[in-house]
Image (cartoon, rainbow, N blue to C red):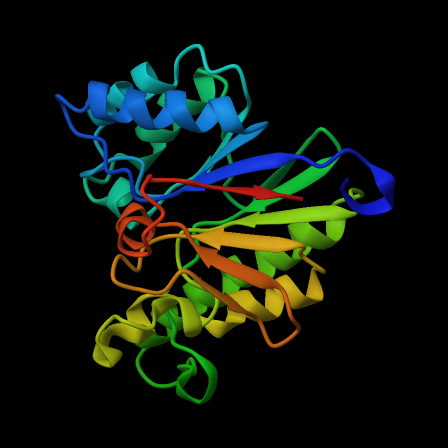
Length: 243
């Protein structure tokens, strides 16, 4: 059972599927297996490999006819070709709940999502000081975190799921070279999870990162990038959670 005695909702979570032309069969096998075990499918960014609408169509072909709702957010790869708006329209027109500083409630569970951004973690968190270009880089992560906190706080649902691409904590990027940790996420997102009283959070992006960790406030965070799930020995490119 979920909180307050409500029926538990099973979430199949994955990220970094990187759809390309010719990938329909691979993607379909992921989706078909995942939705048999879950009530909701989450994809935490990098839906496409190069952010092209035709790649989005390949993933959409695999998602077509899904018997469960699909919740997703964009990743950095989805912005690569400068066509993120077109890619987004492909998914939203097909009924995918594509979260971009927005939320949706499904079966009594609230889902809030942002792509997130860089900035670093803990004592190595970057400050918006110096050149305007650097300030803009830092402030992008701060603004996404503020939006996430606002969305989570605005949910009336007691169970609150955060869907991200960039990491909110250092623990789930451990395994990546320390030199690039600042480019994999930001602690500002962890603060948003804690202030927004999130139940659980999912992200991707750090392909060589670690599967799980917690925010300073105790929110469970899971890196569900396909490479991380494969390296963690789960034997399948998604993982099922109950909330």
